[in-house]
Image 1: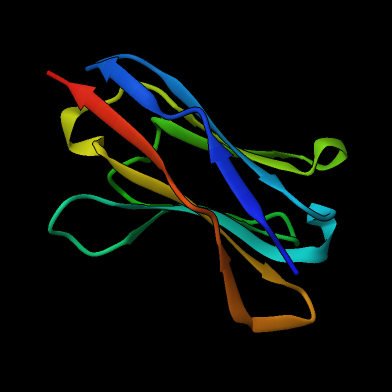
Image 2 (image 1 turned 120 degrees about the vertical axis):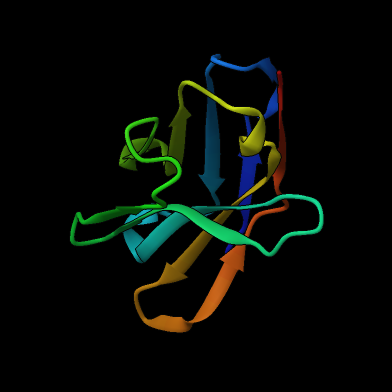
Length: 118
């Protein structure tokens, strides 16, 4: 079984920064995909940033050059550094992962709220 626990959300003013963390219950080397998604009220969940085990990364156009996804294999943790935050970044942010040997199944964290005030 896989558990993902997000942290680091909060209230920040526009232009500020936050770093989200996603701690996994097992080695993140087990995953061939880990990423961040977000869901704003009344909207569908959308991809923010994702990385593969091969080292490639993918960002939503709306966050390119502002957000950076990274990982610490020793701590089994995925990060999302968010800079130059905008009110439209307000959402619940979720961590998602796929195991290398079971890519059909998605594992999700419980989410962490990010609120950006103008």
